[in-house]
Image (cartoon, rainbow, N blue to C red; front, side):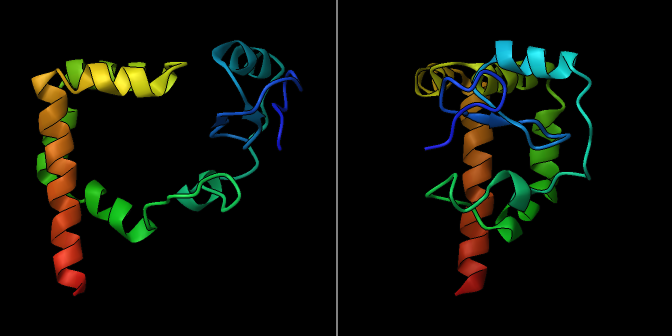
Length: 126
């Protein structure tokens, strides 16, 4: 099992987008950034989703479809949605944060739009 590259105590949940250092919490992230993080190269989805880290991955091609969606980009212009997504991403208990977010109509609309894009991609692959 891997441990946090910063504190060497806990299981890492995140990776630094600049240098791929693994860290477990906001405290460790701030400590890491305070030590002059050195960027190795631009990060990629493949780099963040290493095979040993995740058991259920979304193929990069499908993620790229999300990036091409005008409807999704329009939704992401909403500052409330962006704040909500950042709060989920930074939450220690992501499952609970997601459950709470699902009560927000804007987040539900965002989720539905992501699923529509995924469904379109699946039907075109058949």
